[in-house]
Length: 78
Image 1 (cartoon, rainbow, N blue to C red):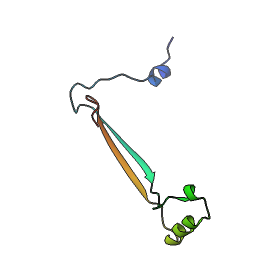
Image 2 (cartoon, rainbow, N blue to C red):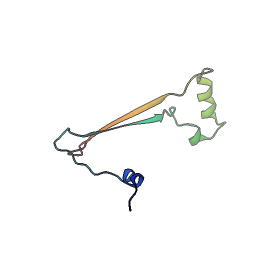
Image 3 (cartoon, helix red, strand yellow):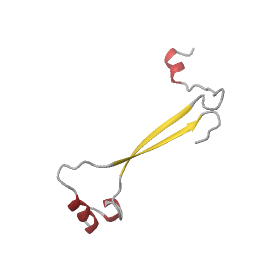
Image 4 (cartoon, helix red, strand yellow):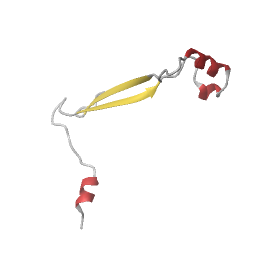
């Protein structure tokens, strides 16, 4: 016997009836990498890392880039 919780956990199939009926939106937050690469490429304490650190002011927050995507559920056109 299938319980109510198992029914809710299953994925549901759906289909869009016409173009634009269902639109999937996605947003991805990515950290900005300094010009020339970040510390992962050059290691911490390297000249590149020190130069980036000198350019920051105390209390400065990390900058982010937000990537947006929208996909039409009917035609899968992005």
